[in-house]
Amino acid sequence: MSPRNLAVALLAAVFALLGLVMPGYAAPAVAAPVQTLEWTAGDSTDHYLSAPTTAVAGETKILFKNTEALGSTMSHSLTFDTSTPGYNHDVTLNILANPYDEQNGEHEATVTLTPGKYRFYCTVQGHTKMMGELIVTDGGGNPDTTPPTVTANVTGTKDTAGNYVGSATVNLAASDSQSGVDKVEYQLDGGAWTVYTAPVVVSAVGSHMVHHRATDKAGNVSTEAMSSFSVVAGQPGDRTPPTVTSEVTGTKDGAGDYLDTATVKVTATDADSGVDKVEYKVDDGAWTAYTAPVAVSAPGMHMVHYRASDKAGNVSPEGMAHFTVVSGDTTAPAVTSEVTGTKDTAGNYVGKATVTLTATDAGSGVGKVEYELDGGPWLTYSAPLALTVVGAHTVNFRATDKAGNVSPEGTATFTIVEGDDSTAPVVSVVVSGDLDGSWSYIEDATINLTATDTGSGVDKVEYKLDGGAWTVYAAPVKVTALGTHTLTYRASDKAGNVSAEQGGAFTIVAAPPGPDACPDSDVRDTVILGTADSQVENRDTGNGCTINDVIDDESDYSSNDQFVTYVRAVTQELLDGETISSDERNLIVTAAIDSGIGGSTAEPQKRPETKNPGMKKVVKTPIRDV
Image (cartoon, rainbow, N blue to C red; front, side, top):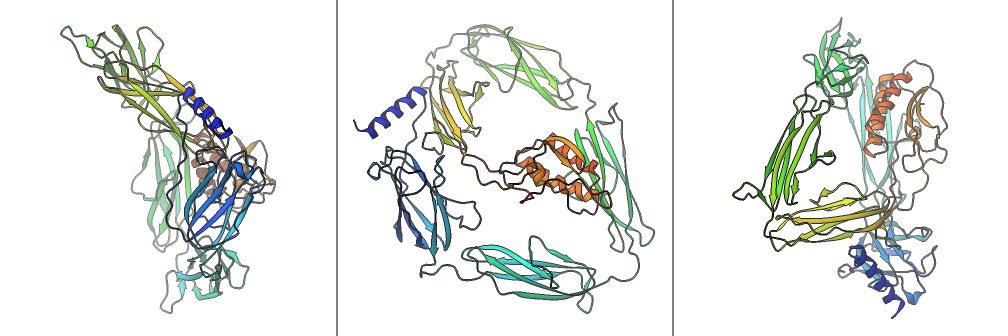
């Protein structure tokens, strides 16, 4: 037997013993391409044996050869980069080839290339030096030489002479049909060129000129254009914003937290033109017209922001009320049981009985439901209990609400007798995902379970992962945690027969890490804003930057409220990226409030300079399976 056939046979045997299905490799369907490009790989981990450097835009056949004939004894991939700035990101290509796979290491795919530059590399661990660039021309042999187009739109309130009253807002927009827009820049009144990221508000009274330009990803720069306008002061009169205050009322506990509900009353006054409107928003909600005191009853930490406008258009600084609501619920939940199934004339359940528990709580809400089967340990109830063991049974049950109140125990008793169907279902599994050269799954693996039963029919399929609790299978299960995982699964039919437990193992590995985005990181142990220590671990966000790196507490902020609003936005991104928890976010926001940063307060404590401050996308690593 050849080495290739022997390797494939051994791998198939291992997968069969584990109860898993060995993934196959099928060559994608290839349409009639305009051109064919070929990459080859051998026994080196730092370069491809051959790779094209130029191509013409359009439909293209990609050939990737990593064969014994080329001297290869290992897996390599041909992957197009879809994240590094400066390259085209419109082609998703990730071919993994092994000399001993079903295609003997020869793979192909059909893609559509556009003018510009692509980066390709090998994703197998230890092989990331295998990389290169592919320049794609527009079909006439010429790369992208056409600069982008950029336009400006100035908006605001105008007087009869066409001048902007109080302020003018400059909006820039750019487009590029080839390599795409890389950046847009503007220059205000002969100042420095600045990267445009948001509309520019100009409020200084006088004549102004805004020059603007755009650069595409091929380096072409548009012709510099200019917009001119004048800003004049508003009409004389009321220029003083209203005064607005808040008062929080409610019943407090010993820690100063509000029980069940906190009510926020907002009051605004204006001695000149008079108050026009008052607005508020709760936490990250939308601004809402204030008409009556606001009752906040959701448990947790809250921030109610408020502001007022007068009839002359002056808007007050944004104020904020900060407080915590806790539950004052002292009433236990109600819990009931229902036993269902096919009964005989004596009232016994034939083959199977299903116990369904239902709990309700009008106060803080149900926290958990538990049950005890035939004197066993108390277990958390998550789905109806399908019982098939012949004999008498007793199920005790109880419920606990979110305030910690526990219901009295209830009891359900019943008897199960033998049914006709005595054959258990047949159940199988397929684990799928992208594999590396060691047959490990890259970043994630998906578990697919199927079951059949020719008797009473399948009732449910269950699985447990890494020794956890049995869980009813309803849809493919995606696993993303790195490391080796164990899977056990079984199926039950409607007569109560349960298949023998089967199982296997698979491994998930991370993708090669990206470059360190913050080589000069702030590595203090905790997240510190100014001199306020949040006590939250100053962990890496995933690309070499710490939480202290991505929160800018050294810039000038007009007020502490402005700084707190900024910190809430940044920590929301960290929460969305699962870098911090909701509780940790609250601690950081509280530290921002306590820091005093903003306005005329003392200068915050300096921290180590970072070369790339601001939010960075967390880089996730590859995964694998068996």
